[in-house]
Image (cartoon, rainbow, N blue to C red):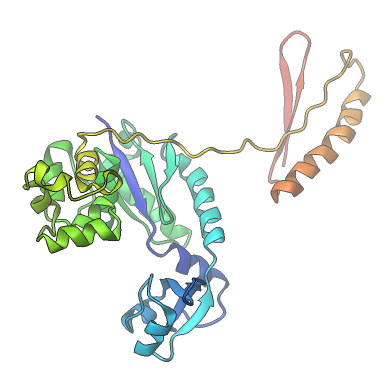
Length: 297
């Protein structure tokens, strides 16, 4: 049975910003991005949220509610880079990890939960591990990627296939990961929950939406009627330098000469990718097919 884990990081931008912020974390602060009609709020602290500031709101509107609201520049590129690193790090739980939007990951955990003591223990281990990094995480596990995404943000955290329709039914239609426009149309029609949407004849809705905005497609993906494959994030291999010798090396000095060629090339690659080194591995490939290697801390 397929099982997908969705990891929702609701405070990624703010929690990353706090690592380098000099002010009090209790201050009302909004991280903003520049837009055509003035700064837009990208993320807010709890204090800012309590005063009415919300992501997507114009900074001027938020300051009308709270003149003391502080603004700092958001760093979406830095947030995305952190999420990419977290995707590599999350490989400890699954060999297939995908970046999921701007604030999440999804992992194929089919058949591996027993290695962590079951799904509840797996979800708890994920949340604990992210907390140790200073990041709030909400984890849900379900039979489909769409359902796991919805449950991580709106619902219970663990759902089996047979209980999926009932678990999704009370959730808002926004849990189907729809854009604002189709959500507004559905709410105007009185279809505010997934259960209400599922109970409406399909033909009566299909003509109201473009193909890309069709909530019925999103519903089918969440319920597993349509496949939604995962594509693991591409990871760059670690930097390496290779020296090919025209003849087999028979003297110990050959290793020193090889290192004099390899180390500068490796240093250039590290500098280009802005990486450091914790451990190096030197491998020598013999003519008989065997490999001699050593690690250097």
